[in-house]
Image (cartoon, rainbow, N blue to C red; front, side, top):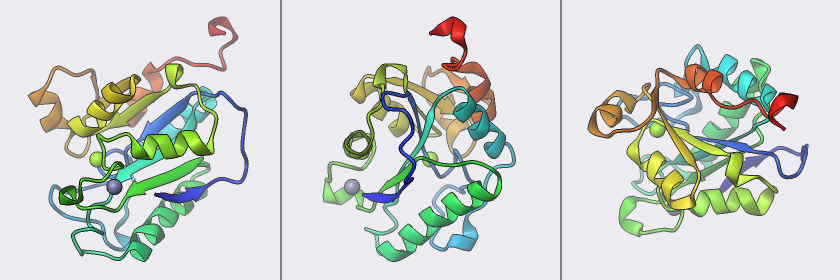
Length: 194
Ligand SMILES: [Mg+2]
Ligand SMILES: [Zn+2]
């Protein structure tokens, strides 16, 4: 479901960076759910990473599994409040997200939006005209990469959060963190590439 959408639309047909949240943007301990806004701690290099991605022409769209709602660890209102906290913390760092979506369901509910199901991505596409061919998914888990595979776009693993274990388990292109990834992806504001 949509937690937040920027009023500013931006150019249609732009590429998007579809970003996982926990373990990619903010600290996350395996098995520990973030259930209150004050528990959200960004990784130090994430604002710089997001600024660089925006400068390269990517819309910044967060897609997050928040099964803590469906499991009864937090309310839907709490999950929304944490999403808004993310938007605010990044804004204070000079980063404007474009949209935040999350799946509130438990795995047992078999919903269409828990990654790797493409529901959140489809919601983003209903809200914005995006160029999927130039877009990518970034996350710290195999489910993020499977989403990319299923939706037919590029997927990159970051070795923050659960990423080290995921990188060891599969043969994925893995980056040290989101800033290393941001430095590696194409710059669509570079006229040479257009
Ligand atoms: Mg994650
Ligand atoms: Zn869902």
